[in-house]
Image (tube, rainbow, N blue to C red; front, side):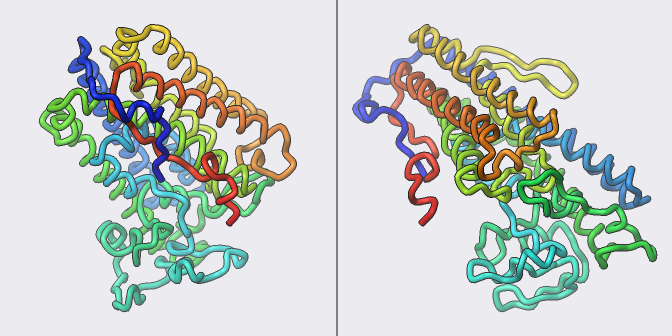
Length: 418
């Protein structure tokens, strides 16, 4: 859902002034995107190696190492999310790698409390891992061999249902952690390493097929990231399209910042879960890594604004920035945006600090958890406030009206419960 968050008066803006440095600002944006997606690929390949090691010699240590590699892989990827919403090439691709929430029963066994097929999704408990063949949309599917093609071409959003997520980070997350059956109590998913044992220690049945699914999903994640890295490299479609129209590129940058800040992060990922008191609405619900993902989303917004990105090897990519461009038009607005983003990062850091003391993000969603609600709402309010400053930045540049992504949780709270 789009929310016209920018002042209505912008609809009357006809003067589109040019500012010195626009091409350089766009060049920095492209350089950061390429570096962040390249880092995401680097960490995904490390995850791939850890998964290969787990499947070669299953053990508790090997499973823990794969889980650690998954968490590390999220750090650069979440910083790329500020490139969504304003870049169609990213939006058309993103569902392959980070779609959520998912009906995990499509993939593997689930607890009896999960239930079965629903009116909304008859495949919610299909359990592909236990099913060498099945009927999908009236067609018989041969799934004797679990391949990346089966996942991406047949299962992903099967029957047009978005909850049928078969690929990407969250499918891999579920296969590494299993369901989090603790609700809003302490504890994440507790998948045993023996779910990947290939001898009489095998638990959960179908350990060989589970390993094949995990391998296929991880390999597919790597290949999808390889494709996206190429789009932002010199000569890539995303890079060249933005260079061709710097003013449209500036609009895309601000659209991505505002939409991630407002509708996606503040709304769908944070306030909605709090309103519903539902841990199923937390972004990394199997691993309890949600606090880190939220934090790095905010860092990604800050990267775009300041034109700076710290790579996984510690080096920095930097250059002319949106901040510099807006400061040329209105120094006060530029300072306000910087302060607003810094405040949001600090509020999300405060959530992480509490998680480090032993209270997970899903516990903060519990009904009557006043401390958790206060922490989450402080971050939500700060993200909304920073979006209003981003709105002012749009106005200061005289850009045409930009519609930011919205969320019923922010725009029409009563609709959430209808």
